[in-house]
Length: 147
Image 1 (cartoon, rainbow, N blue to C red):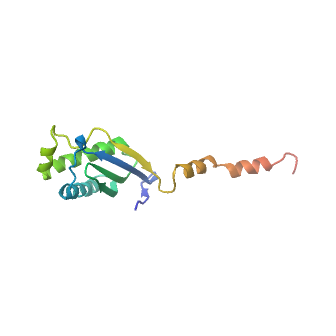
Image 2: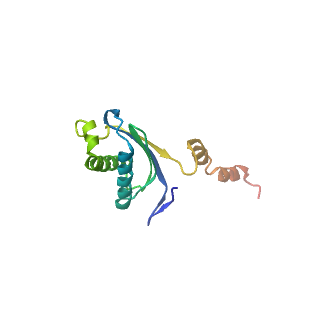
Image 3: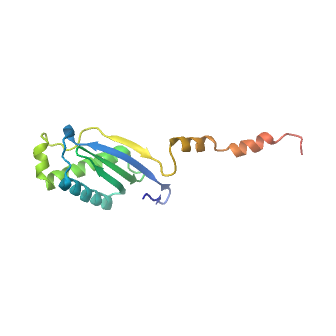
């Protein structure tokens, strides 16, 4: 479960859903690769301000639900995750390198989406749109000369 991250000048709850397909959409995620991926992600958590809330692998791609701090852009998170996980999977699971020619583990592309902690886009949009409505209502009821 995500938690608010408290820093000296901000409090954040930045959640991202990212998906990385394996190169050539090869089915490379077996139990061994899945285990190595999760171990590597635990190491990333210890070194960087990234928390993995969920990791789900399919045969040819991985879904991550990650929480981070504003210091890291989505692009930085993606680059970091792809490079570290690819290097470690190739090192610890040499059989994978035989299935993927060219020395690349991930495709160049990815999917990324923000995830709301307290509501979806419509709920937050309505909340933002209605900010100040109570104040505006009070002033629209005020009639000069009434006092």
